[in-house]
Figure 1: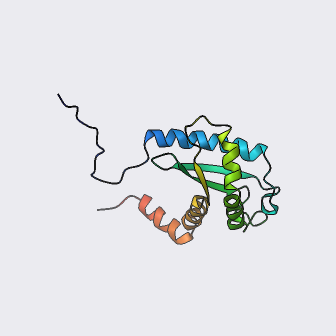
Figure 2: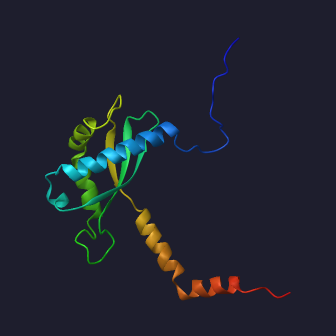
Figure 3: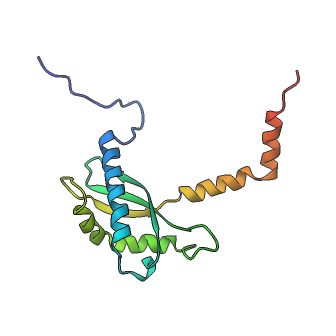
Length: 150
């Protein structure tokens, strides 16, 4: 009797597997420790605190896209404001070094190659906040809350 092979439902786009999600969280937690404890010798990264917001793993777990946000990015008075691209570039230049440090902290068959990206979701959330605080949008929202008369 032949076993039926498990196939994914091909009705639409699939999200990451549980395995990818677990590996991503493992990498994220280890990267936080690596970035906090080990100083990367780069002028751009000196004194910059980073938030690792998410790690997305490839299906074979050999590549990781690391989303980072410099602390204070987007705040006009912060030292890191406007340096997001420079921080991203500096991290990518030191990705192999960080990968080496990461390999000592995780128990995986392969230490994934790292690619750092600036997490733009904070910028999108800020833009949405500004949109919702617009007086015209507030007026529309208040009109919808009023009871409709028939």
